Amino acid sequence: MIPAPPPSAPQDLPARPDLPQPVAGRRLVTWGWLEAIAIYLVGYLLIASVLVGAVIFAIAGVEDPDSIDGVVEVVATLVVDLVFIGVMVVWLRRRHPGWVQALGVPARGERLRAFGWGAGMGLLLYPAISIVVGVPLSFLFELVSGERAVTPEQVPSDLSGVGKVLLVLVAVIVAPAMEELFYRGLLFRSIRDRHGFWIGALLSGLLFGAAHYVPSPWQDAVLLQSVMVFTGVGLAWIYERRGTIVAPIAAHMAFNVIGVVIILSTG
Image (cartoon, one colour):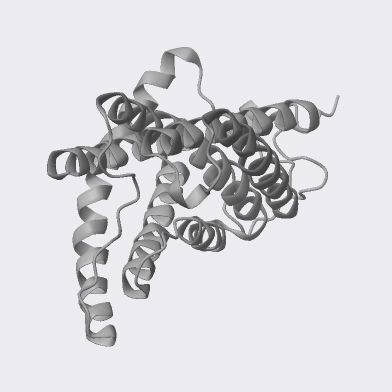
């Protein structure tokens, strides 16, 4: 009897020996990058940001988004991120039943080990990005602009105690889970499984950096976005190296822990 082919290669993704193969038997994803972008546009921008955001602002009595209170902004970010996570999970469960295996979610006994490995890599990634990427780029942008280049603040200032607790919840837990599920889980994997690691890492990293725009002098805004591009590539490498989405989520959490500690200790 001829054995049936393994379920790791969906029919719409024929085997390509010239491309990197799934890590440790990980299944190839069944969604494409256009589908991933559509989920972002509909799930994040329309449903989570516009519709849910409007409800939050109405409840909080906010009429002018530019005058939003810091705590309300953090709460809005928390709810929007949670809603988008829910949208992605519902879409994956309904349209792509094998998504858990495709993203490489390990068995219960292996999750803590994968999380610890990812967190350790995240603690190394922060100083590596800051020194190897951030310092040279800050000098370059200062030289070009004639002004000091520093990364702009990404969180509201003068938060209350409750606001700081919510900030930690968002920055250390919710935002990393949401961003890794989309940028690495959906976007990077959809490109990587068809065109290879570097194309997937660079394209998803560019979009990851673009999403971190903060209104500020151009040299500051571009500095932050450039640093985030390299951070996104690093997180994609962590995913590729370990083969489980748990690793970049943990790395992103550890990365943000350092940033939050610096912000709260100097704010």
